[in-house]
Length: 275
Image (cartoon, rainbow, N blue to C red):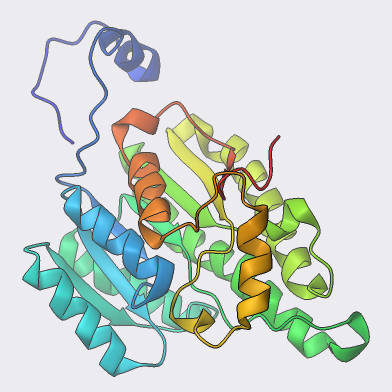
């Protein structure tokens, strides 16, 4: 949220920090534009709604299902939030560049990038995977964050402000078996987050990763009940996570309240992993 102008005490980030020493940090996102990839359903939709509720202009994204995307946008607008829906394959450099250009043209800037788009992740023994599948995981969780960040960073650096929020997974910390392609790609995404946090800090751009546990959404409807019950029994907080749990932490990381948090991997899984 943009604060009222005050007399400057000193220049640069140090001066800003000094001026804010005794000010409450704002959770409002009014005046900010957020791009959320893969946000027509599931956790991405919950993030978009939470960001809209906080006052952000939200650029949502989908790849294939226009009917679902249209329904999500209609729900978003019915709530009185400001946003738009864009179709793009976020593993394609050409489409990412076009997506970012379109959002900046409509809203003027991108302050916050939430990298969430994901493909299906079948669990298989390593012998049943092939390299093409491994490559598809790397495309979504390493190539896509790279392409998106490279496209939004010129504006963020120019304004000396930005938030990049990657959506990871607890599977990396837990080392889930029969999931090697997804686990490897999510581990790479977590490492990329740490490196970028250090690289971009000088421009007051924070980079964090949120790692959800298993939070059932539409694509889990047909998962075996026994599998769901087994996971649910292990959660220390004794309840399923819900999409709003992820929406809340993403909205927090996008806000001024989180401006001194960077390079962190935040698990949102009811205590399934404790570090």
